Picture 1 (tube, rainbow, N blue to C red):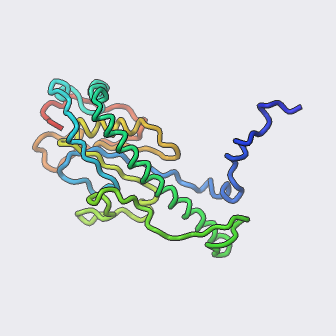
Picture 2: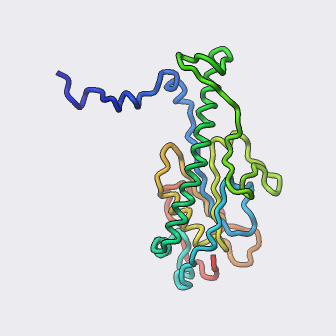
Picture 3: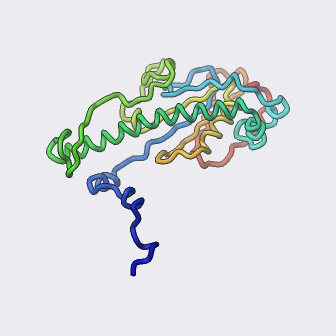
Length: 235
């Protein structure tokens, strides 16, 4: 007699991919959520698909800013006690999820298109017993008006392939060392099923009056914290 544990459930049946989808699975690439903190000047290049200004959020007290940056647990705990910070985090999360939905749909269409080409160039009709229709469309998230362009101000561009395999999200404050960094760290800890997460803090090591030089501290979402002790800033 088959035990309940070994008997396939209806849920298992629902989670089983069709054979044609399983054949594509080894070649599938997980899309990347690229979270970047930075100071409001100079602008981020190439422009992110989504950009969020957190300068309206309360700044931590000076004694905390002087001793810690946004990767510090002490500073993050202070930010997390503020209702405006948490509300802003949730609003940003919703916009990111909406953009992810569009990118995921575009990836599925690319897989179907690739499958159709392997089956004699068919992109519409019956493919492995499935009737599919493929329509080409721009999958890049709209974001806000300023950050939606795939071409940056200095001519750098984001390829169309990158636009459907990567979602670049910029979060900025005054200096790019405290509020924006803490927000990016908070977003990186959230669950993003089916997505890889990478984090960059562009200006975390930038000194006041340093011009366009920046720290460019980049890591994966589960990387360690970075050394702090930055004293003369208001970001």
